[in-house]
Amino acid sequence: MISPVMMCSRSSSLWGNRSNSIHRIMRFVVKKILVVLLGLFALQSAMAEEASKIVTVDFMRAVMGTEEGKLKIEKLKGEFERERAGLEALSLKGKNLQEKLQKDAAIMSTDEKHKMEKELMEIANELKFKQQQLQKSGQADERQVVESLLPKFKKAVNAVIAEQGIDMVLRSDVVVGINPKLDITDMVVQKMNSIKD
Image (cartoon, rainbow, N blue to C red; front, side, top):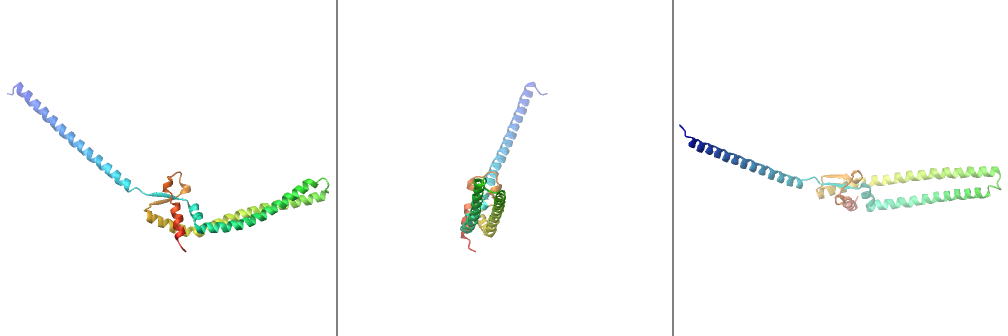
């Protein structure tokens, strides 16, 4: 038979063994958790290094900022100024006619008034038509400049992508907000200026 003292010593050794087993299991689990956490931190660091490089470019500023773009725009501005001078002359003619009509209305016959009012209306219509034509022509000319420089823009963007290791380029006009350091427009302008046709 087993004496009560022996039972106590046996039960305490059982509990002691269980306590040691629990400690060993806890240490094993804690070590595994630490290994997993260290692995996650290492993975996060590697992912941060491998993060995609996303930048923006302002298409219009790039195209209009090139030497060729500036020359073409200056030429268009010269043509625009000549046409605008013609509009201003027509507008001045209408203004003078209106002032004469207001000034001399009291001494004019009804036929003369109607004739001047008709002429004034014709000038106003012609002025409106020419302004619309000038605006449409200006937009078409600007579009033509942009389209003529588009191939050079694409070459420049592709060259900058290759040189800088860029993964994605977004148009700056579709991005809500971005760090200005990530704008490659100036680099693209320099590349476009260096590309010879």
